[in-house]
Length: 152
Image 1: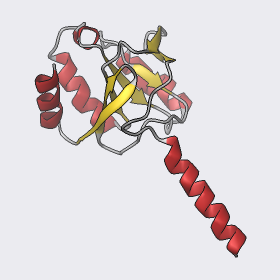
Image 2 (image 1 turned 180 degrees about the vertical axis):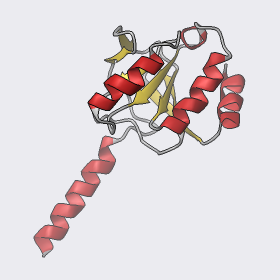
Image 3 (image 1 turned 60 degrees about the horizontal axis):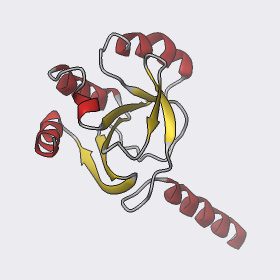
């Protein structure tokens, strides 16, 4: 019994330690966008906007459609969709064809990653030289618009 409790506590501690939090430094890495272009997450990036649900993606897309195509690049921001919980066949045949129609770049996260996941929320990481300075959890398009208008 004690071994089981110890094992469970180690697993839980490990799971929480995996996520990126304020004060963590992100190691540069690459993701592919919907056009199969390899994009590096590096020290030039100030914001990473992440969606883990259809609802959050729709809010972000609605906001970005009203902006110029270079809005994200101009503001050193990246938009990522977390597809790690979606079967790859579904993503390939239903999600990718829709987002390939969009003119701005959307990075695709296929594997389990260290970014925090919160269903129906937009998660925005504020970075400074790959150091996570702040994490915003947004639940409405109004909050996203306010954050991006104020910050950009």
